[in-house]
Length: 214
Image (cartoon, rainbow, N blue to C red; front, side, top):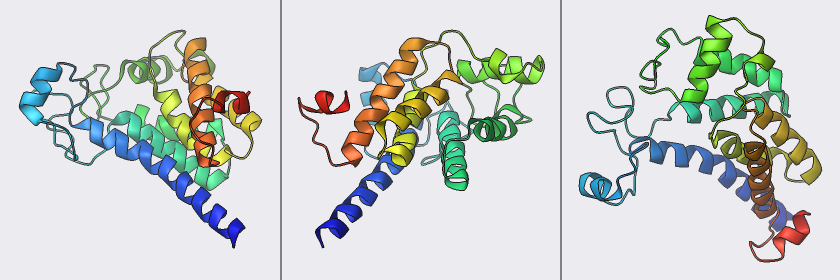
C-alpha cells in the first residue's frame, strides 16, 4: 500500500509540474511585460485569474483570457514531442517549432508579427536566421540572451527525467544550448530542473537539498 501511495503522489507531482508551466504562462499572458506595479494594480488589481489583455498592451486583440503566448506554445510543442517520443528528441522539437511558430504566415520580421500578438526577440532572431537566411540550426542559436524559457521548459524535462538526475542534467543542458549560447542560462536551466525533480521525488525544499543534488 505504501509504494502505491508513493507512486500516486509522484504521479500527482509530475502532473503538477507540467500543469504549472501552462497555468503560469496563461496567467501571465494578460499582464505580460507590465512592470509598473502601481499601474498594474490600478488597472487589474491582484491577478487571481486568467485575463484578456487590455487595449494597447501586449497580445491585445490577438489572445484572450486563458490562452498561451508564444513561449507557452513552445512548451506545448516540447510536451507533445516528449509524449510521442518518450524522450527528448531535440530534432523533433525543432521541427515542430519551425513548422508551428517560425513558419507562421503572420510572422513578418517585427515584434508585433505572429499569431500571438507579440513575438519574443529570441524567437524573432531564430526566424530571421532560419527562415529568412536559411541557416542550419546550429548557426541560428544566439550567443547571448536573457530568456528564461529554457529554464521554464526544464520543468517539463524534470517531469520526464526526475528519476535520473544525471540524465536530466544532460537533457536540460542539450535543450538550453539549442536556445542560446549563454552559459549562465544553461546553468540556471539545469539548476531549476533539478529543483523541480527533487520536489517531484518528494524531497523537501530545505537546506539539505543542495547536498542531495550534488
